[in-house]
Length: 276
Image (tube, rainbow, N blue to C red; front, side, top):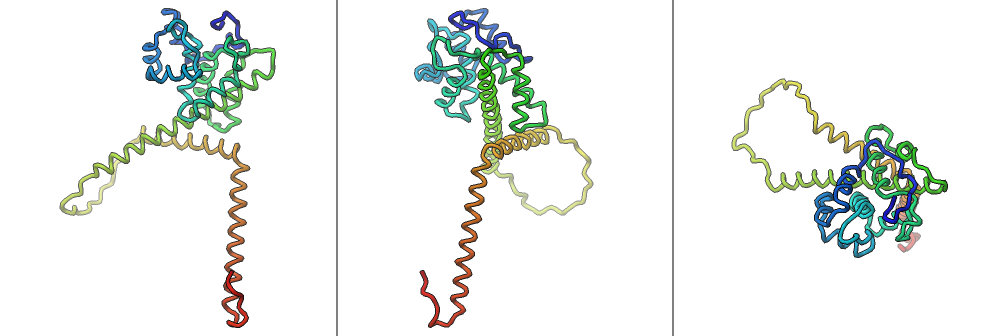
């Protein structure tokens, strides 16, 4: 039920791991969160949330209290904002639930959509198939309990969730890259001191020491990279093919010009063609 008392489709759906469950408990206990409490829950600055409200990306709080509809939208924006432009996130939410402020066009509660996203990310991490079709299989399983008389509703939710999952994956990759780059910058600023005297080489048979965390982290990075690469291959193959065709054509033209120049140089001076 939304703030107007309307029953929304998908309310009975119950993903295994509810991302919104703890916040629902807080809302039941308080009847709504203050701005400072929302900041504590999300890790966002108050000025950021107020700016989102001012721009219309989040509805105005009711009596300075943020309810389920507000917090769910804030959590979704926060999950996607590093990969997708804020105004595009707003378009995405309009695509799912329409633009009406009274919720008359809504096909799913945004807290349920957030729960779906959390559960889909969890299940995607437990499968070896990280292609676009693999992600869609996970999504179909997550939203299996969703019901709505309009068949287009399920299609829109599936499309939105697919985009949101890949956005979260890209955000995770970017954060890992930033962390690794930060470590490299620290090493550049503080290089390891070189020994004053060269030490003799001593042949030592090293013991087999298990390396756990770095290997797991690297495997995660490689696996995530494969996911993004697969998505790019499936979605942007036409662009890639055009680049290859243009490159090959340019190479052939360059080679043809070089051959003409060589043939011209081998001719006597009185029959050579003037350079273009």
